Picture 1: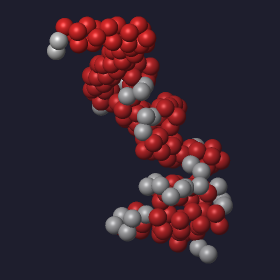
Picture 2: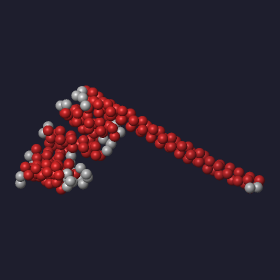
Picture 3: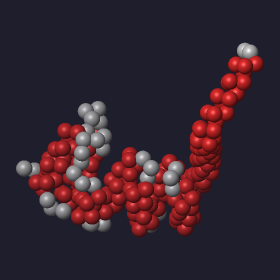
Picture 4: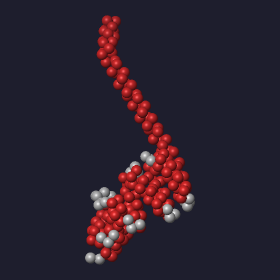
Length: 209
C-alpha cells in the first residue's frame, strides 16, 4: 500500500469513527456487560445448586428420625434460601411424608401446599396436589380436595387425577360422578399398570350401577 493510499485509509477511518465511534463503543460495552452478567448468573446458579445439595443431604438425614421440629426447620431453610432449585421441591415432598408418618398432619399439609404452589417442575406440583388431596380425603374435606385436583386434562397424570377425584366423589356420596371419574381413570391408565387398573376397577364395581 502506498503512502497516499495509507493516508486515505486513515482519513476514511477517522471519518467513520467520528460518525459511528461513540455508538460502536456503547454496543461493545453492552455486549461485554451482558456476557459478564450471564457468566455471573451461571456462577450463582451453580453455587445455589451446590449449597442446596448439601442442605438436601441434611433433609434426608432428618427424615430418617422423628424430630418434627428439625424437619420443619430444615424444610423452611431450604424453601427460604433455595426455593427456586429442584432440591426444594424434593425436600418438600420428603419432609411432608415424614411429618405425616410422624402424626404431624398440619405440617405435612403445609409442605405439600408449598410444593403445589412453588415447585419448579409441573410434575412435582401435580404430585403435591394429589398427595394433599389424599390427606384432605382422610380429613373428610372433600370439596377442598376436589378443588385442588380439577377435571383431569390430557396430560400424563390424567388417569391418576381421575382416580383421586373418584375417591373424593365416592366418599362425598356422589356415586354417579365417582363412577364417571373411575371410568376416565380406566381409560387413561396405561395397560401395563395392571395393579392400579385392577384397584380402580374394584372401586368402580363396589359402587354398583
